[in-house]
Length: 40
Length: 555
Image 1 (cartoon, each protein chain N blue to C red):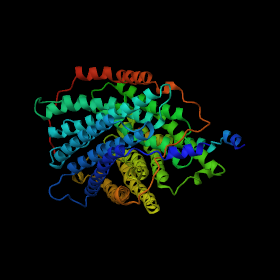
Image 2 (image 1 turned 30 degrees about the vertical axis):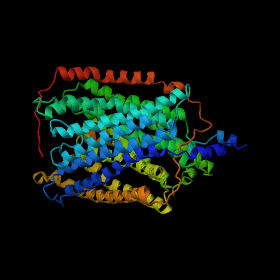
Image 3 (image 1 turned 90 degrees about the horizontal axis):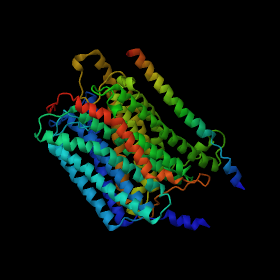
Image 4 (image 1 turned 90 degrees about the vertical axis):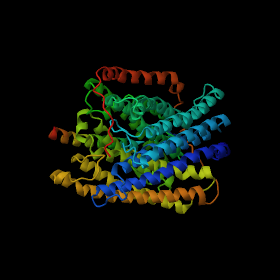
């Protein structure tokens, strides 16, 4: 009976978390890129 | 009906004879942690400008000890010890012959470690842990390091023999996930360490013995980094083994997907090796096309890294929701935060987010100029190796050592282990944070304290160097604490049974396709990629070699 609810597993938190990791990488990269463009 | 069976499975113990072999490696690893950590403390104190080393000990000497003992010895020994236990637990007890090979490997490595250490202590080999030519060490140092590599191959062969035996007995079946991961890591290690073996045996040893006057510096660095980057993954993959296979069991959940885990490991095998040029992006003499190509291959590593991040979050979320966590992040609170076996590696995982972001910046070709040879790089690998990997190893030691010694982790020690990880995080945030910031301000790595003749820019670095000393001192307190816990688990903890946790795959996961374990396919792609990325540039480097360099002893 609980199988059904398990099957429709909710992975929303995972989606947002992985999205956050991706965003963090992008923001860090662009900050470093800004410094690079500014200096070289 | 499976509960009794499952219970029995959980209690499977690593055979006592295999335990001894694994423990021998772990002893050496933690001795290295103490001496190497002490040297790290001395380094940050010297760099604060407020402390001078006594008895004529040189800064570069302690830097070499710190790097070699922690970057090479602690890691290699802990990894091999962990892998021996993991193979024995999941593929069965080693045969006498396999175990004997394991012991031979251990003693060859240890003879090499002792030889190299003596030369560093005698100040005959202060060449930093990357042993870059044209800095020239005593030949015994190079022979010692070569023996460490050869010894690791021998121990690796014992593990591979166990795996081959399992596959023969169980034809057509995917091997146990943990065993599979161990073999991927060993395959990567065998392929990549050939580079450093060639460098040491054919270039550095003849040159340090005086058989040849000069060394081709460019070729030696290229061979070093062919090895040096996969070395990073040789450290990281055992941490991933803990994350993928052990942690789901500790939190009471399931492995999200066996196939995804295997695919991610195989992608690491492919994309960890043909990428060494990203450490040489400012190196003259390598054609920019080949550097660019290897930058692209480097960026491919992002794929298995994000697969891992997804898989971890998914395991945690599924388990947290099973325990009644509601809303977007309610599951997060439900995780077993009071269990050091989970919390300590979790902090390591969290550290990998800024560590990975920094890594992508480092490898972004022209942007490498921003950080090259600055202490940012030191800050970076203190997040990857000295936080992500090391905290995962500490977390693993808290069940592995008592499992092997027949003892238990007491509540008190469990609490202390969590405190240790918090102290570590605080110390590392201060030290590595200061390194990253001051690195962007141009402070160099690998260098003794200097005011650079009172230069304005160098004066601005000093407060950050003091911060590094504060962070480094806190980290040393963390080392003392972990050694206290390890000593307790080795000799003093109450006797009892400790589980070697092995996660089970979620019942919703797809069946693992056998092509994921088809070594012919993966090794062929792996070797093809290496040949593609390295053949032309190496021919070019040899044909248009720069003038050779004599050896320098600058310390």
